[in-house]
Amino acid sequence: MVNEKWLERIPADGPFYLFQGCFINHNYPGIEAATRFILDKLKVKYFVSEDQSCCGLPEFGTLANPLILTCLVGRNMDVMQKYAPYVLTPCNGCYSAFHTSATLMKDPEVATKTGEVLGKLGRKYSHMKIIHFADFIYKRLEDIAVKSVKVLGGLKMAVHYGCHYFLFEEEGLDSRENPSFAEEIIDRLGGEHVNYTAKDECCGFGMIQQVVHKNMAYAITEEKINSILNAGAEAILVICPYCLNVLDKNQKVLKDIELIEKAIPVIHISQLVALVLGASPDKMGFEKHSVDVKPFLDSIEERKMEFKGWSATEVASSLK
Amino acid sequence: MDKVSVLLTSRWNWKLLEEAKKWGIERPEECLSCGACVGACPAARTSSYNFRKVVRDVMLGNEEKVLSSREIWYCFYCFYCTSKCPSKVEIPYFIMRLRRMAIERGYGGDILRVVISTSINLMERGVSVLPSDYDRMSPASAEESMVRLRESLGLPPVMRVSEKAMEELKTIFKETGFEDEVERIRSGKWPFKGISEKY
Picture 1 (cartoon, rainbow over the protein chains, first blue to last red):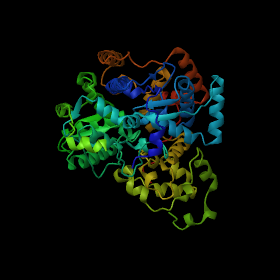
Picture 2: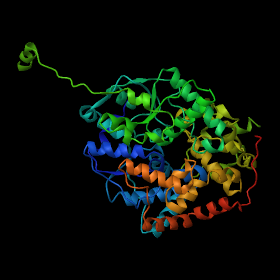
Picture 3: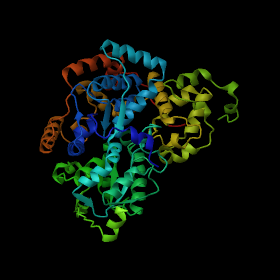
């Protein structure tokens, strides 16, 4: 069930501050290109600034140091609020950094120290609303469908939302219990979503586990992929670059050692929407993906124009 | 393990529990030991990790045992447990809090050393992930190839953080103790104690 209250609160036309995340910028620039393409196509105004730094989540996730996260999030929000009232991000990591920071700030000790450090910079901890780019896409889905020039020719796709999308309780479009908004997006754009048993499971990244306990991380990806393959999916849709990296690269390894039968393309929601809006596949940064995306690209078809004429009875009844 | 003591709040070690409850983490002591978290947990399926044992040991004050163990380093930080927990205990935050307590007592060095690169990148460039982190290339050629790719996509060169912002970040690194901690982990000078594999 889509959270209607949150949907209403998403500003359809911006303006937004587009958060610059290091993982997208330095590993999957195609996601950034696709995101900017969509915003331009929908004529939405957005800002970026070189005064913004990393979100700070990787440092909290590894060193468990609360202050580095609250200070970076607080500082970034102070920078960004001068540009726009809402922050937009296509990364679950950057998205959840804001939630984690808000939780940590509930501790008076952390809040005081954060205030002190930011005070030395002449800044203060200001609260901003963060919106996931997937939420924005859902908000503008009808416009996207109308403006689209391509369709997913019945491609069977499985959605992996990623754990950190669900951290906010009252914000975000869906809860972890059977989310469905990304499936609606697939269906609306001419694809066919498939459900699978391990939908709400982790991709295997595990914050540090992909590095520290590799065997555990691969075992979790293997479970996830096998569940997706059993459901008959031909591609995986993600809304987070970290999930994309893990599901894509780990699939390649798991396929090589024959723990999974085949490897299927992993696509970020920004890339998918940009493609149906007419972006060139050469500009989506697919060269950074390990699993060949050709089967996915091959299933994309030109959108057939549909004209509906009115019959005499329809005209008559509409005049009544 | 004393399974009865955990039911008697009078036997709990409140000092350790209160320390572990900082950061706005709500009610770890409300754990019913029902196991819903363990059923959902990816770490529980792939290692010996069992959150119920961890929280029980914190309640009973088995400080050394918990903080010196590998057990607290298995969590995937995926929050699947919290979504299943009838008491809505924010288990991953609680585990992060225990990791912080362990680090402050000198544990976890071997683990931190392999994940320190994002922190070093942050100190040097203001960003956590660089092109070379995920490509088997030298930092210079990885960055060059990323700049070329970004240009071909019509994007500006790699993400830069302005000099003014870097100055501010340096103050943050110093004042939060982050810089000092990263330097000590990087140089290996921190007198880290080994962690216990048995739990």
